[in-house]
Amino acid sequence: MAVLTAKGISQLAIELLTRTLVLPMTVARVPGPEFSGHNGDTITVRVPQPTTARTQTNPGDTITYDDLTEVPVDVTLEHLYHAKLVSDQELTYTLENFARQITLPQVEAVATRAENLLAATMNALAMSAEGELDPTGANINDVVLIARQTLGRALVPLDNRFLAVSPEVATFVLNQDEFTRVDASGSPTALREAIIGRWRGFTVVESAGLAAGRAVAYHKSGFVFTNRVPVVPRGVNDSATAESGGIGMRQIFHYVPDKLSDATVISTFAGAAVVQENDTSESGDPVYVRAFVMDTASS
Image (cartoon, rainbow, N blue to C red; front, side, top):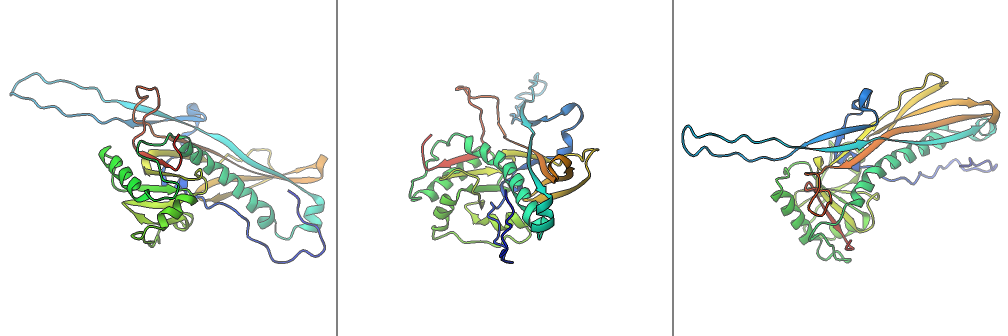
């Protein structure tokens, strides 16, 4: 990145083009401090499996003892960062607002990369049976009702259900005559801005992180996301913390004498995974029932 140095720079600062970060605030969050000690950079989330009660037919009959089963879901942290050298010339002659010109773009870059981990997890899932959307959106209502029915039959709770849609599918949803926007007051700012409304039992949110033509209906427990702010190194000159879209991160400053520049580095640890209901299906693929994937193209 180069900071502009022309003599006639306008005082008008055009708003940074950045994605509204929403997906991490719609899923289950693993507390960052759990990634410490012997756990290291990977932690296992336990997913309990349903079991069935039995009937004792006659008094005194011998009863049957059943095992309780849990499925492991591993979440691994990745170290995401953005680093920038700010020269003495930039600091002396050019910069008017360090936070706006340097820190803000760095924060948004790291936060977006963190959300991309969750978006990539959603984009990687195979389309659900009966989840194909017409390229014109003509069947969006029918497919969302199928998604609702499928989640309900899988005993997915009625509360905390989300429908994350790509911008293309958001257009399909907004074209529905019976769809109305709702007041999302009380939600975190970024989430409030991304909520389109409530429809068919889902809170509908738009995310440009989803692949074109993709939508995912899911319960909050259908995905897990985690984020941890790195500790401050002992050798750093100065540090600060920042937050964007529910993602925390660390900024460190250090002078680099052989470059006659200040180094500003923003980083965070983040990870995401889909919640599986059992290890694999007969085909060997992971089984997930807390999410229903829709797409305009068969996979």
